[in-house]
Structures are given as C-alpha cells and as structure tokens.
Image 1 (cartoon, rainbow, N blue to C red):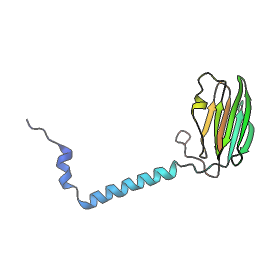
Image 2: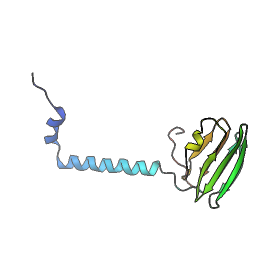
Image 3: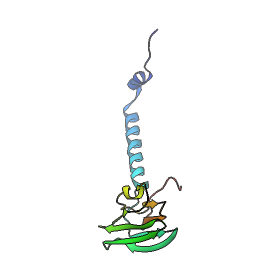
Length: 131
C-alpha cells in the first residue's frame, strides 16, 4: 500500500497565474481586515453610571474623574487622548485590567459597580457582535 500526498501532487500543477491570484487575494484580505476593524481616533469619552450618562468629556484635556456606583467610586483617567479605568471597587478588577482605550468604539465596563467608559469619534469601530 502506498501513501499518496494530495498537496504535494497538486503543487507542480499550480501555475504562475494561480500564485498571483492567491497573493492578490491574500493582500485583499489583509487590507479589508485593517479597514473594517480599525475604529479611528476617538474625540471624547462617554462615562456612564447605572446605565445613564454621567459625563461626556473631551480626550484633549488630561484629567481624572471620580464616578459613583453602587459599590463605591470608580476612577477614570484621561491622558494623551486615551482613557482607562484606574481603580474600581469591583472584586475581579476586569475593567481595570483592560488598560488604555484609544480608538473610537472601544469600551471598558465594570459590571458589579455599573460604571463604563466608551470612546466615541467620527468613525465607530467595527463590532462583529453587534453586526
């Protein structure tokens, strides 16, 4: 019984035009991915507490904002046109570990304390979950 390698057998049959088509297709996939999943720069941060807008702040001014929630105060930092949740009284600290947000459409949510910060701008980041 002999073993047959279908991929190795097909390689001699692939012509130059086939390789160019594969290369062009790969380049198109990379360019579409970069364009669809890039949210662009954000202009402002929308901070919510208890599901309601607490404050909208421009990212052009560095500041720290204290946001009250059911468990206590969450602290949000705005620096160098980015935002992050610096501290939060929630037990697992997922929103704090998320780090800096800098593109439009990015969001950090502290569910137990019902506090969130979302960056907005002229172009919203593509989100496959909401598509």
